[in-house]
Image: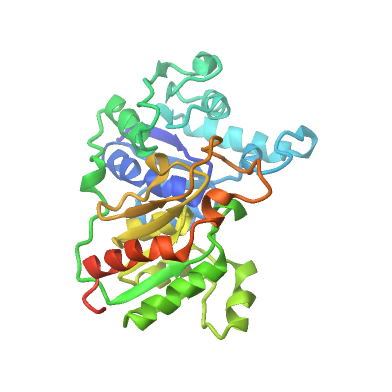
Amino acid sequence: MKPRLLVLELWGLGDLVIATPFLQAAAEKYSVTLLAKPFAEELRPRLWPTIEVIPFIAPWTAFRDKYQFWHWPWRELSLLRKKLLAQQFDCGVSARWDPRDHLALKLSGARERLGFSRLKSRRYLTHELVRPEPLAHRYESWRIAGAALDLAVPPRDKIFATTNALPPRVLIHTGARLPLRVWPLENFSELVTRLRQSNYTVQIACDADQLNWWQVRGEQAICPRDVTELFRWLDQGGVFIGNDSGPGHLAAACGLPTFTLFGPQLHEWFAPLHPASEIFEGKACPYKPCSDYCRFAEPFCLRKVSVAEVWPRVVGFAQRHLSIGC
């Protein structure tokens, strides 16, 4: 019988996709249980079908009022702990230097607990991992955790590579989890026009609050309602263009080369993992990286990036990967 491993990744869609190669390697050696947001259940059949998912929305992952403890779901938290304790995990791991994760590992009852200590959270761990270099991609934290568990977690250039011929279609997703990571829709619209004038087929997807904007302008944009629908849309594309967002990471996992517009976050940490992925770095700002909020009236690091600046990079990206174009 395989030893039982508990893995924590309680944040966004992109974070969970970044953890995918680790999860796939871990499933070869361990009986893996993943504690993650509910959309992990939709990712599981495609990315890691043998893993058990326990869906959970951690209250400390909210963007606002995350420490209003009187609003926390204490009964749900108690039931979750009982469920984890009953599984008698041999090992638990988190790739975040997050004391809340480490306390959760301790409360789960996992016999061995691996993580990157912060603010004296080593007291909750049995094995303290050595952090990667400050500008290392977040995936490297999973590789370090994998090495500690004797797992063969591949390097970045060996994962998510394109294996099939790409259809000649550009997929553009204009949304993002946070508004400050969204390039202006007017810019995306001009980019779409230029691509079509260069004979590329373009399909737009967007967030729900953007759909009317596109429809008013006569665009047949789609709005994927869940991860399953997002998978179906991505399977029709050849390349992906979008903001620093979960759909971009999922596109890379589906084998699509991605072009990502970065503003407030560091691309060194969060660039999609496809080996042919490219990024456009936004304007310089002394406060980067920004997690949830901008110190200025608007995130000029991204909003002030013009189509004229982006276009030469985008058309070159499309020409490298798609057979139809100017």
